[in-house]
Amino acid sequence: MNRILALSILTLTIVFQSFAQNSSLNAGELFTGDVNTITTAVPFLMIAPDSRAGAMGDVGVATSPDASSSHWNPAKYAFVESDMSLSISYTPWLRQLVNDINLAYVSGYKRMDKNQVIGFSLLYFSLGDITFTDNNGSTIGQFKPNEFSIDGSYARKFSDYLSGSISMRYIYSNLTGGQFVQGIESYPGQSVSADVSTFYTREIRMGDRDGNLAFGLNISNIGQKISYTENQERDFIPINLRLGSALETELDEYNQLTVAFDINKLLVPTPPEYDGEGRLPENILFGKDPNVSVPVGMFRSFNDAPGVLMSDSTRSVFKEEIREFTYGLGLEYWYDKQFAIRGGYFYEHETKGNRKYFSLGLGLRLKVFGLDFAYLIPQKQNNPLANTLRFSLIFNFDGLREEANVN
Image (cartoon, rainbow, N blue to C red; front, side, top):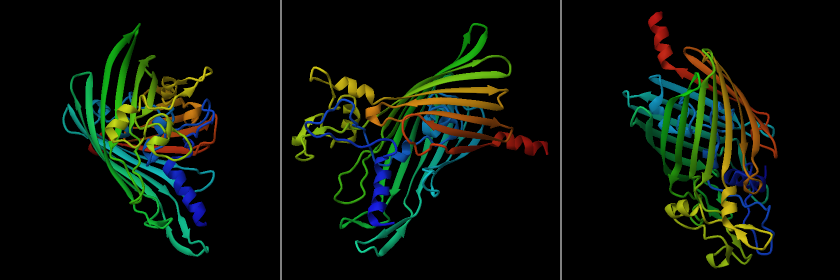
């Protein structure tokens, strides 16, 4: 693999071109319908890591708590029923093109007392083998690019219905192995971030049926920018606002159905429209300067878009900001709390990445362990998870202890 191809693959990883194409439009280009996607560094943090949520349209902020809640809403841990659980997930990536890129996820929790739970997770993204060559085609090195994050969370129940959580995360991204890129030495990108989340759940009565209504909110990856060279401007990491609701109803003694809905928005600057003469603040025609601090970028992200060009030649910033929200809808059916069938749909606007796909999955729960499977069906464009089977393995240590006591 020559250097151009290698750098292209690395660039693909950085901007997550499978999600979208980066576009800062020049003067005179028609904005309506054109891509103006928000991109960040370390986008692997936004991949749905577990198969349960992956089968439900990437929905998980308000669904019932499980061992994989670290990614979606750590505050859910306060309402787990068991004392300790562990989940291991594996996701092949771009499997139709290569066989050595994958995402692995390990997460779990341990109850401290009736009100407090601690959780953890490790997310590892391997990008296979890359061979670096010089301009003459001579091999100058070989490397396995990789990224990972490790975090710990503390969840506490404030009442019988409400909980909150805070998480700390370390992020490491090594894409070049210290190689020189255009004469500049590269190095691994590193960052530290935090999550703040809350979860509300309450039993309700729907006619003659029992049910549960839940709401969740999680602001994740609030942290410092990241860079891979001394001369490169630091890039935002994917600070994300996720909120949603879930309604669970017991159809009868053996059958349960859950409907869940999530909304997401990246709290990072939207690319402005430049005049084609440069990328300095004075070259911005529409929008706002994206080179701001993390707090400013988060608050400004609701009103910094260049705007959609309307038929009367005016621009609607509000309309473009609305386009930056993504939506997920998920269904989960359980029979006797042992066998699950799941489905979901994910939507992203055409000008903001155009991710649209259906998802399907199955779940199995036994006394000691469980299995989840997920399968994604793209609707509009190719997806790195298309025609790929993902799976998660869940261990219930309470059941393991019960089995040991019986024996």
